[in-house]
Length: 383
Image (cartoon, rainbow, N blue to C red; front, top):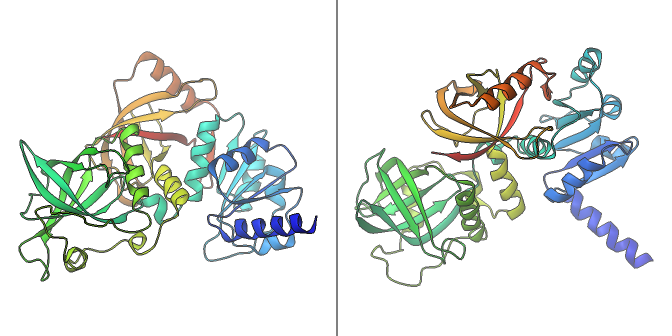
């Protein structure tokens, strides 16, 4: 018995030491939320009843609670307060006002579709760098760049699910399209070919004066391609690849060239990545929180994966539907910190009726600014 208690204590310490940290407080009515956190493999502490004194001092990333428990919550103030989600069994204006004063970030009114709740939780957990940009890992492996009928050797310096950086023998004009071809040993076990657009091409620096550092973003990333790209990123989470053969570009000086180009390195480049955290971070980047909703479109939070002119496919999960509703949109305008404006395309009569329902019904999600509804959508494709 003592050995079992010791093992349980060790496991609890491991959970508390892991990130992100989530606190779930309720009176038994949020069993579905508990199951969701377990399925996400998010380390969390559950309290049925009031939180403990230790809970009040702990630096949580996210707190999820019933309306009653979140109003009674006493969490220590910090420079970065946790996101707080209240799950409401009923809706009332006085309750909303009380929750706002308590510091609640989001209020979810039941019934809510499980997929929409998942997207909301993932979005709330990853409020920082993991959500605003995709995890990027060092690779340093030979690949090929194909433009038209010609393919040239290159070195893949680093990779994320949204783009990459390459070391090439010759410059590629910004805006140019090319196809990045990664062999199986680089792409997580299966060869991968993905279309990319050049964002910037700069000299490789003093270490490699005749070579160029090319920064590119991937175009039209389908859900299947996104999963393959994530597998390729995860394959290099423990560090860069090893060169084992001639490629036409010598591997010597790759790291120095990457530093010499003057590009700002992402913080995630310097650390080993936790694979589950990287996975949920990528998922969070694909969650769009839609505001100012109308038949014409909506405004979404800033997202580094989106640029003006992109065509998008979005999945919206409604409680009254088993299958997601698919919306097609184009990024019409970038308003900086205010977000991006999406314009809906080819709305059918069914989609129009559903949007009318969303607009005029009580809001699914309310934030701490006003009572305006917020549509939770998942980005399926962008190109």
